[in-house]
Length: 445
Image: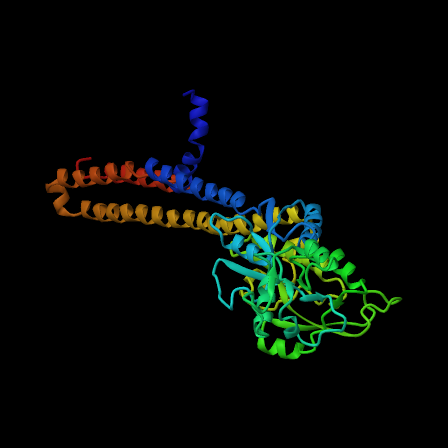
């Protein structure tokens, strides 16, 4: 290796040797430790960066869930995050994907009530996004008063894996309606179900946002031959099924000119939660909740302005990052900087500032420690030299001078082997000069 490259490679080691008076071995160890700390900090700096791509399990293409996901996608793209949307059959499949290993999706829209209150340490909630009403459309000459009047009918309860199907089965079971003789269940998605109802191929359909689009629902509401079921027993259903909430669609809210609906209509429905895997990056959690405020915070037919997202804990615990967001908003840097710039600054503060807070005091303490250590060592030999010089004035020194000279040689040899930092050179050479001075005053002189 050329001499110049060798010198460059030994610069740090030489620094520890000169400043702290360490041996070559200890200097090499100090160099390796310092390099390890810096390498770990650099690794963690890059490792802790939020991913640029996020996967969301939504619902069937054209459904309310899928439309909401595309709104999220557009907003996140402006912040430099690519949201990949996975189509699904609905809430149940979204939940399964969040639980899968290896992971299929990091986040998903899931209606509450699908897990019977069970908890999973692998999934957390970022909050409720809306109350999703169960819409029951039916064909009849006169309005239905009770769901039990659907006995013996042909019913579309939603595709397998949808939250609509899960809730429809529970509501029908409370009215003693099952697929074994009391009714005929048909599995169709939103658009196909609406078409079948319009053609008279089925008698009633159960629709929710994870199985039907807003356009399909609005088209059904405008038909004269199809009715929206009014949950006159809504208060009772909410008491029996604790994850349901009562909603009201005001008269004329769909079409004032045609008075649709022609009366205030009671509805029931579960909350829709934004669920995430527990290892979701905190910065992405904040970004998602900020996006949810823009998408779900707007006033709508069944919600008030800024009512959602809401920190309401249901089937899954609210994440710590979400709790902090609802209490105090975004982290400091993310309030005033673009997402990726704030992420960079935040990681510098989180990674390198603590490393500096450890290393700087350590490097400040090391010189003081080694100054003290070297000073104690020099004073040790001064004490022995003073003792020896005093003894040289006694009668024994004249009778046995070789004994005292041997002790002086021992002191001199030990001092010459000392590793002394450069800033102790003056004291070191003073000590050696004083040894020579004592030798000049020995009895043999």
